[in-house]
Image 1: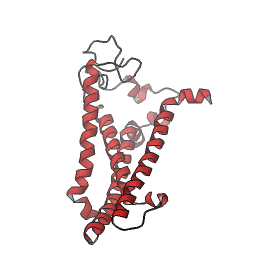
Image 2: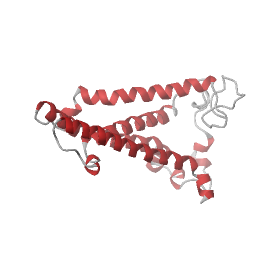
Image 3: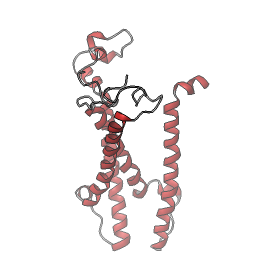
Image 4: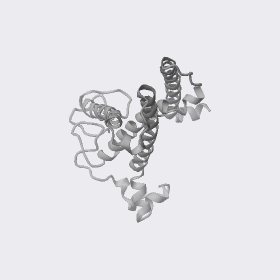
Length: 220
């Protein structure tokens, strides 16, 4: 177990932090929702009922959506674009690495990396496709949960009739929620790309070596 934890420490810590914070979000959101319900003269929700509400789902998927968009776009853009001096960029004159050539595949290379046709294309792009796939699922979850939450709030405040998913999709409210997160994600990535040109973090693969010149592009 000790060896396993050492070899998987990064993912173990990240996923543990995710569980801790999503549970914390759920309990805090539950309290916020119940305060709103009591103010409106309605009975409070149980915690388990709250987890199925638009209030919780909208907040959860809205953030997941922006994170997967950020990472998917980052992976795809770094395949084509470079930034001089940043370790987040591939070297300025590098197109494909020798390891990316299927003719250079070794015996232990993944099977689909050595094939031709659609399987190879899919595998060569599977990381960005996977991330964008999670983005699409999160976007759909945000849309569905957001519609439910919007209708509940409108009913509580104004007694308005519910609207459909596509009506909410075309509303300023939905796009305000999405873009307020999207812009922050791209700002954070741009900050990492630019700050890593002149700043260092000893021991991190996201940083150039401490003594590397500012003009060195790519982490070596």
